Amino acid sequence: MKFNLFNKKKKPINIKEEWNNLGSKYAKEINEMVEFGEKNGWENWKGTEPVDKRDHLADDIFNLLKKANETNTVKEFRNDYPPSHGPLIKFLEKKSQSIEQLQFINEQKIVFLTGTSYQKRQAYILDNENSLKLDSSINAIGKSKKNNVFAIATENKIITTQGWEGDIISTFELKEAKNLGITELIPFNDGLKILLVTSEGIYLITNESEKMIHPVPDLEDKDWNSYIDMENATLSNDNRFIVVGDQCSEHRILDEEGSQIGGIGQQSEYPHYCLFSKNDNQLITNSCHFYNGITIGVSTDNLNGIDIPEYEESQLYKTIDEGMRVYCGVATSDVYILGDAHGYIRAIDHNGKCIWRHFLGSTISGITISDDEKTLWIGSYSGMLHKLQLGKGFRDNHTIGNGNHYEDFRLILWKEEPVMKW
Image 1 (cartoon, one colour):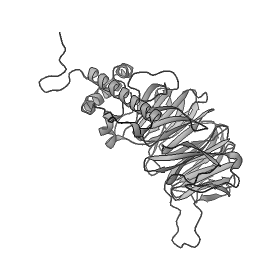
Image 2 (cartoon, helix red, strand yellow):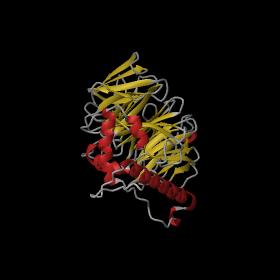
Image 3 (tube, rainbow, N blue to C red):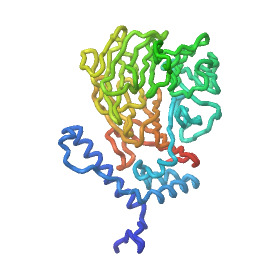
Image 4 (cartoon, one colour):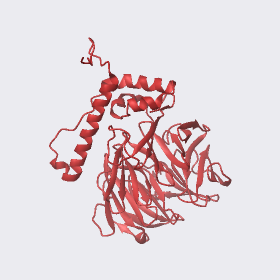
């Protein structure tokens, strides 16, 4: 006896079967297309781009997801309906928000924020699968490159602590940088200085001063102001170097006191991101054009006095990637794991070899990794936070990518909705 998929109104009466059949087919076709393009060159791909044909199931899936969260049957729902990004885009347009400033605490615990620097933010703890709202006055959280120092910003005050909720190291009362939305907050390894990144300038904060280290003031321009777009900065792990950049500036290399000692010109249109390797042997800088970009790597032995012209080939750098507009990343012992504008995360080694790629969907906005480098948490503008076990093996045949990673769950933090898991 054959099972009829449709009733008289042409509505699927077996949503599970249709969701899985179409989802696995789409993932298989996308993976095959990407593999072909990477091996043979995209100019040789003659096929059409696969389409996820499950948009019509979105309302039913969303209602089933909400019910599963209400009845504590999320694991069963996840096994029956592997998650996907494309079919839920209709909800993202109204409900999504950025997940940012992810910081690893210990074991399976992280802290993160929802919202961008110009929005009212909410901080959360995620401990295994349990999420907890933190004080609503918190508007930024950062962590040092070494020594496990945390920085928390609340109401124009920044406190650094030794470990999460540990002993207070220092307190900074903001004056010059008060009332500015904080894009990124990076404490120095001793907790006595802060690198503060905002769209109104990048500051070096101590108890004695608040020094704007980027952009450089134009003293001849009476109308000059410090507003910048695509503001980005990083510290070397040993805190010897500060790197700063924005849409209208090269990546400037500064010493630990904020004085410029070098410059790296962009190889795409706009400087957008920077990060040091975990061993501090290499600095990567990314510049972007629309949704794509170019990332180059420079030996840190050459940073003092370096001068790389924009848009010019040079023996001073190697090309790490020629496709990604990078928004965030982490450095592991062997690779950079970078998140891009297209919703991909990629592991790329120090010579530019892509080790793996994994698709999540929406622009990647935050990322952190456990100290043992086995668990990765990734936030995106979809309003979802994904928890991956690296190299554990695919959980289902809906996964887009070749990284062989297992998604424990994705936490959904949508506007005007309760926090849900999938």
